[in-house]
Amino acid sequence: MTDTVLALESLHVSRETKNRLERFIALFEKWARSINLVAPSTLGDFGARHIQDSAQIFQLNPNPQIWVDLGSGGGFPGMITAILLNESDGGWVHLIESNNKKAAFLRTAIAETGARASVHPIRIESAPALIPQCDAISARALADLSLLLQFSEPWMINNPNCRAYFHKGRDYQVEVDKAVGRWSFDLVQHQSVVERDSVVLEITNLSRIIQ
Image (cartoon, rainbow, N blue to C red):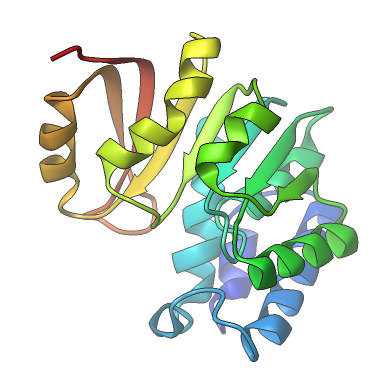
């Protein structure tokens, strides 16, 4: 993970926040030796692939808001958002992760970094009953866009101002075209700061199309 130093320097955060991120990275490295937190093939460029890629979500919406992070896994982007929220006066991230081992890692990471987050070891479908309101939703490498919109619908209906941010790779347009037949939504495509062929899809005004 030799590129992590450059990744952290690129974020332009306070010394305290940088220390929190460094503690998270050290903890991630320790836990990743025993459980599969991310695909092993992505560890070679860890800083760019995971830290910078996750941080761009917060940079698109750096307000002290309530987030729901779907399928948080090894903490990307949710834990990075939760750590960066320490740069603000408020905000919180609800990390939804049904895998108990990954949820245990996330709880430990929160305790050791002081991240503004809590872990919910439940299925995504059950989360809206427990967390009825949020301002923003994030997900990364979780599911195709149509399913992500289905997951997000309860929160976006309850809060018309809610925004969803989904990382997508080079084939994102296929997923968008598929979703358009089932859903109505406004879309802004943000070019990824990490990969030229990737984007962050910002979704607002979501509603289901009645067939």
